[in-house]
Amino acid sequence: MRQREREISEQWLAALRTDNPLPAVQTAEPHWHTALDTPTGALPAFRPGTAAVLNEQSRLTPNNAGNGRVLVVILFWFALAASVEVWWLDTPARSLTSISEVLIAIGRVTGMVAGFILLAQVLMMSRVGWLERWMGSHALLVWHRELGGFLVLAVLAHMAFIIVGYAQDTGSSVVKETWSILTTTKDMISAFVATGILVAIGLLALRTIRRIIPYEIWYYLHLTSYLVLLLSYGHQFADGQELTEAGFGRWYWISLYVFVLGCLAWGRVLSPVALNLRHRLRVTEVVSEAPGMVSIYIGGRRLTDLRARAGQYFRWRFLTSGCWWQAHPFSLSAAPNGQWLRLTVKVVGNHTGDLQHLEPGVRVFAEGPSGVFTADRRSQPRALLIAGGSGIAPIRALLEELPAGTVVIYRAGTEDELVFREELEWLARERGAQVWYVLGRRDDPWPKRVFTQRGMRQLVPDVRRRDVYLCGPEGLVATSVKTLRRMRVPRRQIHLDPFEF
Image (cartoon, rainbow, N blue to C red; front, side, top):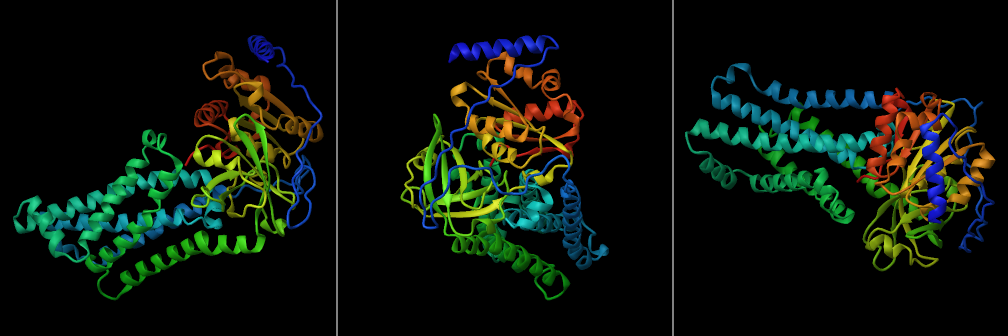
């Protein structure tokens, strides 16, 4: 096996040093795993999904993600301006005659900005489908992180300006004024607790910390954001000068809370419960794909009604001992075919380790489908798919729905780590696609050359006229995006599904 890998490496290096074509991949007859019987009947051996297959003559669906994003940005700034307008209407200019009054006014404005950003953050956590379709899942993730930092800064600024302003007004020290506000003002203790929780969440969002903590810890600590919303509500309406009395400001903010909480209830509770009551999902088979990689087949009722697409993901909760208390997002690794769903999991921790021992018949609670990493987001006739590690799962599913001429670049350490090799090569033969395997350790120099501009041009000369789908480790995605942008591939043609939480 190592000799074969060295031969492949030498062929690639020789090709990259010259203008010779890169080595072709070998195809093989596929061998499909057969799912077990389920309450809905026997499931057949693998076959490509029945979702609509696009081809070069198909009319491309306009990519409206950019328009939706612009609309969301406009609505965000309009609603934020209306929130601050509440303070503006309630504060005559002639009242700001001293330093203390100006400081207190700044504190009130930053408090309203913080309250609005908190509602926006909760809305982005609500998992409502329309917001994800308008924004795109990757853009939503970036917004959530960026606004989280601004939220912490706004809350701390609100506290600082209010305390210093009142201390200036009363002539007392900052420490004394802080204690006075904390002990004499209604709902102030809850506001301080909410601030502490927000700062803790903000620290967890730092990249260096986020990389080393388990997903479960990150997830459950982020759920305390709902507690922050509850604690801040009382403080905002009890102590906020602009909201204590009935009027436009009070009803405007109540409307914001009702809207956000309604979206939260629908996206997090009502919609998932309805989905699972309708489809009654169960595990039908667990198959080992490669060392440390397993595929889980899910059966159920009326799966065609799920309207899932290749490239999307669900949040899966397996109702068995040790697994029921946590849900994890995993992409579909095969296009939905109306008879079963398949997810493929890399064993990296206790939870994923338990999943490889699931028994047929285990009930599954799923939330989704989610994500816009789908074929209908493309704007060009052809596509390039780049995968690394277990990122091959959504890429392999997408290959079923993309037109002839699609190119797949699959980065892995060794041939033994290649997952779905037989399926990829069979699909490539049936769909008229090309599959390139880039093998080697992370410290090997030659695989890195493949993801340079020269290496990319060798593989895909017309890359600027393709949509590019990337899924894999953060380093692979970042390197590929940098190369693509240097090659002047438009941002709207680059679709990301990175391994991040």
